[in-house]
Length: 629
Ligand code: F6R
Image (cartoon, rainbow, N blue to C red; front, side, top):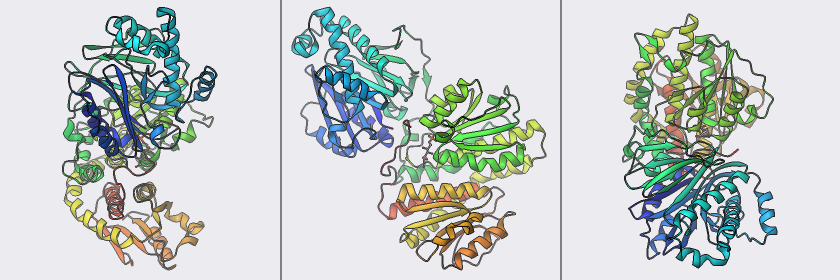
C-alpha cells in the first residue's frame, strides 16, 4: 500500500522522485504528490488520480532543480482519494512535510490532543496528524533551546539554518522519534524540513522501507525499483529504526535510544530490465509470458542427482503436519499444494486465510510446520500470522519472492521463489513459482520421510514443463483472445475444478474479477449441485477445468449438468480427452497440468480485461502489497 521515496544527492531531485514514483505506482495509484525545498521554503505539489496528473502539475512549476525531495503515490486508507488527502502533508507551521505508508491506529487520540492545542486539519488523514505531532514536539524543543517555536519564527530559523545545522538536526531527530514513539500501528514515514534542508529523515514500523546507497546520493523508498537505475546497494531498515540521509552519507539509529545501528549492505541481483515492460503492452502480459523462465529459475540448484535440495530446511525437524497461511493468490497456491503435500509427503495439511487465522485462538503444536506464503513478504495479515506463531515460539517457514522483505527476515527459514520482480498488481508468475517451491517441498518431505512418492516422474515432468509452456504460450494467447471476445458479454462467471484443479478454479475467478470487474466465483465442481447451479442460465457461463486424472468422469458429469441447464461452458482439457462441449480449450498433456492451466486462465483474464478497456496493471481499488489490515 502506497509507495514512498526520498532523495538527497547531486541530481535534480524532483524529476528523479517522479520517475521513482512511476516505478512504485503499482503500490497505490489513486493520488500522488511530492515536496521539495525552494530557497528554504517548502513546496508541495499534489494531485488526485494517477501519476500523469501530478507530472502535468509539476511541469507547470518553474524551478524543480532542488537536490532534495520526497514523493508519494497513494492507496487511500483515511479519507477519499482527493487532492487534499494526497501526500505529502505539511504541519500547520510548515516546519515539516511527511509522506507515509501505513495506518496510525491511535490517530484520533493524537488529533484530539492537537485540536485542543489549536492545531487545524485540512485533510481526513492520519498522516496530517502525524506531521503536526512531529511539529508540535519540535516546537517544544525549539522553545526550550532557542526560546521560540518554529511557528513563531519560521523565517528566522530558515535564515539560521546553515549556522545551526547540527543543533537543528539533533532537535529534529528527537522530535521525529518522540512523535513516532506515540504512534501505534504501522508506518514508513519520510520527512523533509526547511529547518534541516540538507537531510531527510525516515523511519519504519511494520511497513517496508529501505535505503539505497549511491555515490554522493542516498535514497529511501518502499521498494527497490524506485532507485534501481542509480544503485543496487541496499540497506533494509528494521522496525523501530530511523535513518538520516544527506548527499554526504547516512546514519541508522534506534528510534527509542538514538543509538547507532550497524546495518548490512545487500546487493540486489536484478537490474532495471527485470522491472521494465520489455516491449509488452502491460507488465501483466510480460510476467505471464516469462513463466517458462520462472519455472527454470525456480528449479535451478534445487534438484541434484535426482534428489531435492532445500538446504534451508535441513536443520528443521520433519514435521507431523503442515499448516499453510497466506492471503489471496498466495492462499490459492497453498490450497493447491495441499493435495500434493498430502499425497507425496503423506502429511496432514491445513490451509488458512491469514486474516482469519490471526484472530482466532489457534491451537498450534510444536510438531507441525507452519508455512507462510507471500510474494511481497509485506502483506500485513500474513506477517501478523507469522509474528503470532513466532511469539508463541513456533518456527515458521516463509515462501517469499522479495529479497529482504519482512517475511523473509522474520521467518525461521525462507525459501525464495526466485520469480524476479512482479510489478503488475495481479499476481501471475509469483503463483507459478510458489507452486514449484511447494511441489518441491512435498517431494522433499516425501524424501525425508521415505514415502513412496513418484519423485523421479514428477521431476522429469517439472524439467520438461518450461519447454512445453514456451511452445504453447503463443497459441494459448490466441485461444484466450478468442474466448475473451466471445464471452465479454458475461456479467458473471463460474470457475469449476475438482482435486488439484479446485484451487486453480478459485484463482481463475479471482483473476477475472480483479482485472475485468466481472463477477466470478470459483467452486469445487462437486459443490455445484448443492446450490450454485440454480444460477446457471445462458447469460451465466462457466469456465471448467477438466484434467485427465481420476476425477475426469465426475468433472464431465458436472459440466454436462451445467450444459443441460443451458449454461455455456469453456472447458479446459488436456490433449487426448474429449467432451461434448462447444468451447473446448486444449492444453498439452502433462502429469502436472496445473502449470499449463494457470497461464491459460491468466491469459483469459488478461485478454478479457484488455478487450473491455480496463486498467490491466493497476486495477481499481487495489494495490500490490497490502500492508494494512
Ligand atoms: C491477486 C493478488 C493478491 C495477493 C495477496 C497476497 O492477484 O495479487 O490476492 O496474492 O494480496 O499478497 P502476497 O503474496 O504479497 O502476500
